[in-house]
Length: 395
Image (cartoon, rainbow, N blue to C red; front, side):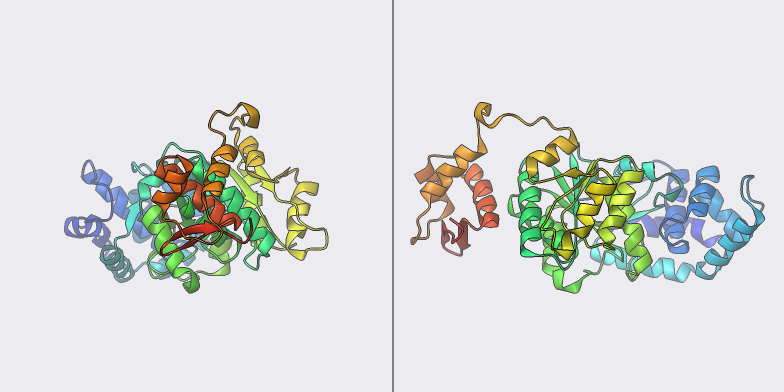
């Protein structure tokens, strides 16, 4: 590898075209490119890389690795030897250029510490914080001033678990809460869909390259997440999701969120790993109880019993977890229950009504009606078709 290649002026210009916020000066551009290269050298959560970059800055730290210069104090000989043994085989500008080409082709953005879109919660990970984030969609969502919540759980979820996840995510997203999850089947998918159904914002954090949907069966869902929120990851385009990357991905979900709720989890579920990261970061943790006979709720019961997770039975419990004031139902002037009743009463059991007609019959604003219809659809008390809405079988 040509040691001057990463900081060649032409390469820096090509690398940042369309990928990152315009750097203020040449030094900032140099640092951004160094972070991009670092994301190719290390596996997620490499604390030695985090310490070295923290001590020297991304560009100078990369120079130390490329030119095998003297390290700053604080690193043992074994740490230096092992780190270089991990990183040197990945020192390939060809791979970096291939990733950048993919990123520019599909519209991927690059975020690095210090960039305007960098989520401040990631800094709480310290030496284990990511050195670079690759994102698609509305990446400015990551720094929006709204409350954020992680909703995670089993891939092989039960209908009960998916229903509860959808209710919690949908109702909180209606309030403007940003919903984070992992884009997987089961609870993750239910949380993303619920947020999307009510017009909320949701972010999927992937363990592989963000240019490819994983799992592939959720491609259409992830396309909708990208359009209405964002898809992010810390490994470069072209990277495959591995078990290690899934486990390390979970620390990002926990760090990006103000609180984490586990809806369903087995005894050895990866969701418990996310819960562990949330606890280590001092983030509030909640768990949804389930039947004592259900294997998919064993992990949730364990979190409540052994780790003092708050018992979550609905959105108001999550609001308490987030520190959001919960008003008494009787004193809420715009009670969702009253408005929901009006919309439900405006639906017919047999006739399909367009949204505008439902709003007219309910005497409400159409935008409010659309939100409530989305929630009713999640509950099964309303059904949608190409020609309108009617009452669902769950009425």
